[in-house]
Amino acid sequence: MSDDKLVMMANQIGKFFMPQRGADPVAAIADHLKKFWDPRMRAAIVAHLEKGGAGLDDSVRQAVRRLKEAGAHK
Image (cartoon, rainbow, N blue to C red; front, side, top):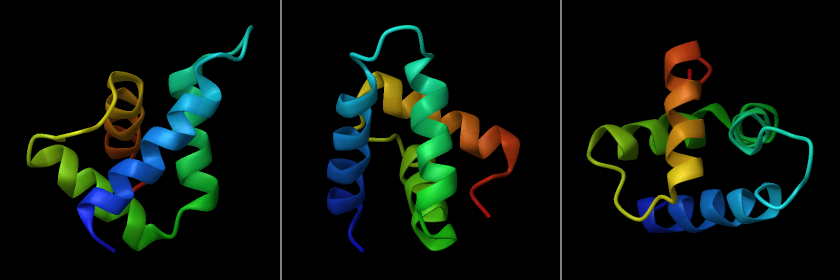
């Protein structure tokens, strides 16, 4: 899957979780990516972040960073 497609999908997830009250949107995004994205997709979005993360919304960038730090991208 292309980086552009992964970025678009991740940002859509981010847009869904951002307006929800009483929840940490970054944690919710990271949890969603961990639960529902294939490990190859998670590895690809982390690799994209490591190359600069062009196009990622700030909350999504933070969520992907959390995945990377937790080792949940493998």
